[in-house]
Amino acid sequence: MASSDQRVLVTGGAGFIGTHTVIQLLNEGFTVSIIDNLDNAVIEAVDRVRELVGPKLSQKLEFHLGDLRKKEDLEELFSQKKYDAVIHFAGLKAVGESVAHPMRYFDNNLIGSINLYQTMAKYDCKKLVFSSSATVYGQPEKIPCVEDFEIKAMNPYGRTKLFLEEIARDIQKADSAWKIILLRYFNPVGAHESGELGEDPKGIPNNLMPYIQQVAVGRLPELNVYGHDYPTKDGTAVCKIICIVRKHNH
Image (cartoon, rainbow, N blue to C red; front, side):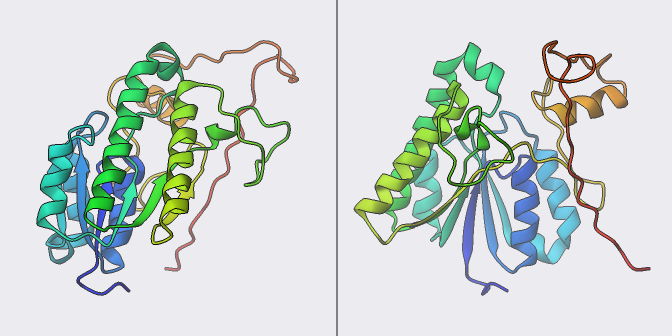
């Protein structure tokens, strides 16, 4: 358990992965601050986090509506509180959208993150967990991916993640006081065991599982399957889903 005075800032903490991380941090004894511009999240998700952890732990959670691209939003946070570490989830994450609007992704993901790194350095907060992506591997020659595969991002979204990984490595090389972890993962899916918290993006989902879920509940009319030259019976892609089941003893 963390000591009661350890404070973690979670960027994008109102999002799917962010909210689940915040719950875990609170349960482990950390004090948590969230900064999120609610571009693809809703404040109700933070309210549900408070409900799930209970009133006592909710007192250790703060929410700040802010945008990492605005240095004044970060200054306001870091000038008021001392943060021991930052977990950085904030960012746009749709491959197709990034191809259509690359400048939007460079502006949001790169500039926002660089502002964050600069502000952390200014206030001597040098512990960072960065939410990267397996898209940095491009199209690997074989699967499953392992960490030492060649990195060769093939779209603007993946390149923003790769660039930010490189920036983080350069920062750490220049100042060994920095402790940085880079997390690369594919499309995480699932929900809190209570069923009260899961992935529910605004608009039409860009990831497969929330799209399937919205078709299942009638929000969207159908799921389109693309591709005709895969090595399968009908030429369409096969989606393999790995499920982790938690057993409960009653």
